[in-house]
Image (cartoon, rainbow, N blue to C red; front, side):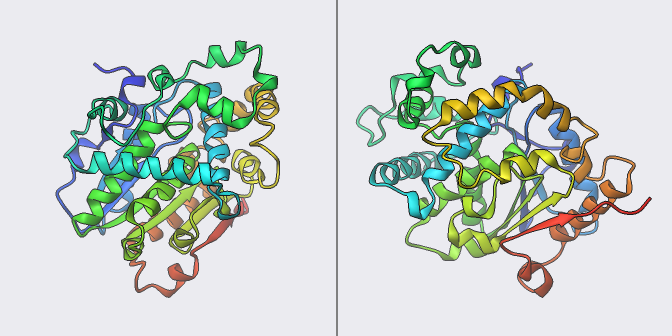
Length: 349
């Protein structure tokens, strides 16, 4: 039996509804503190939501290391996303993004089993590969206790901190980022329509994967016509996405989802140069943030998937259901929702 951490980046399915090669494929990325067992329950819910128009449903597992660890991963992923904004893409960051695309190319040259350890797969590439893997990559997943004890964290800038924790890999959750990107490539190459459905931290993972995919496919752009993204309880904003993918993406947030609101408001904060202060603040507030993200909160996946017996939960699930079963290519209402954040209001009791 694999541990939770050993399943990071693995593919999960709901056993009674295994993929059978349908023309429409859903890739689900779970959020913070969601175990593999919890994600499989969410996949079951998605199977029932799409029963009228079935599609292949696969989970990309983002393993949890506890709430504080997941939050720190989220912050690191957000900080790296900021480096990829067109107005912030420096020469060094451009090279880094290209390195990720080259890694994805190596992965796509083979067929990966559902339980592949993505980082181990990359580390086994020939030494003459164009990809240089830093020694610190062996430390992944990073040890949060090490971060807490760093006496020099106040003196580190973003580049130093990034290099210390991640080496040559994407910040946050590299296994699930690469696995998601790999599955999108395989789906598009098979001629499938692909929907990325991501919750909470999963939306950060998806946004990072989209940047890598855009570089991977460049200069070919028609691939985006086969891809649509739905982020619920999102921890990203539209600005975090590649401009080409923004019209293909819908964000759904309840007005009282305070966790999504907190992450979405990280717009002009100089997070990347004062990361240590943000991490310190995040850790100090982690207990209160954890309370906001409990299973019956407005941020929980259970809320958005309709698993709670409340009118608000059922309303959110109905919206997700429409987005999942309707034809994005021909439905003018859904087409008009691209690049928007839908804010759900509570229904009167």
